[in-house]
Figure (cartoon, rainbow, N blue to C red):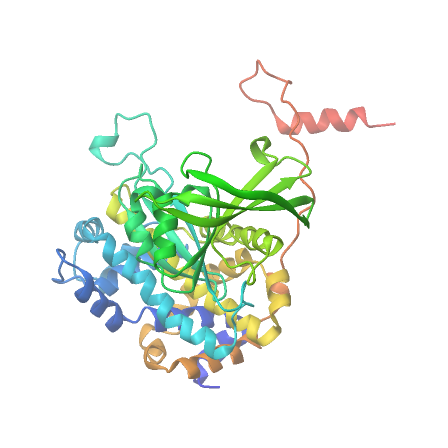
Length: 460
């Protein structure tokens, strides 16, 4: 064990909290974060308030250890050399490029650690680096700004396209925009900049544009993307053929020529999934376009690959449920974008902790049985007391530890984790919501009186 005796009490009782704080100290070390700011920022600069202090302040809010930036500032005011107004001004000035760089930095640093401990998930398609992309409009904020106070409509502070590596389960990039009305298509150039040769992109139909598909192919990369009915002009090449059945659906394949922006064509495979029962919005067919070679992935395999796109939807759900990544009080767009990216960095920290659990206890056991919600609840409940008992200087050793040594330490700590505390509880099938036809003329009702009447009716 590489930790001293001061850590032993917390490691024995809440090893997962020690793991999380240690990984966070490693991924977001003050020297590395401040150097990142100096390299990336173009307009903002450092006076008295270091960028690393700002990251540390917001991370406490994101992890729900403090309920607001104001509360986090008051708790640490003796260590912050500027006023609360200066903190908010700094938040309002963080450039989107700096926020995105923070996500890439944590993914790059922690990816090596996950690989060192053998905590990766099995590859979705061997020979390719799969990347799942999806867009996320931030939730509406409070109307704290003067320009918002008379507005009835909800103010949207920004938009982000997140890139997820499903093998490492890390958010490896975030293309962020301050315009809450932005769409995926408006960020095409920036999105294409995140792809490289032999990448395999999984995405929903909002990304199905001729410009994006052509750009991916020109980079020597590949895609499995749901077809958009209006954004892609195409013509069939040859007949459609039946390829088999999978999960309550029949799968077909057909070659097509999709029109490029320059007028040329791009030969693609169009996979059609005919569903036995309709999904949301009554849809009975899904169409997927891909440029994958048929020898690497047949039609059934492509259909299965597309289903993994929901992994990123799950990540967004985890961000909303376990991390406070969309703080309603931060109405300024740059501040909202920065907070979301800090939440992605915190998600990467939690993913690294979960990877250590996989390496120690097995992939299937952790993925099937461990709930991220209970993990986050344990950390937020223990964090304050742990940071009092183990002051900041004691954690500095995590900043310089080598990835292989950190990997070994995390696996050792994972052996102390009491998995029963974090057991996932599978919910049963959803029941249809009954129509609410009773007490339509009442403003409110008494639950206690209704229960009493119900008990009286059930008496013999």
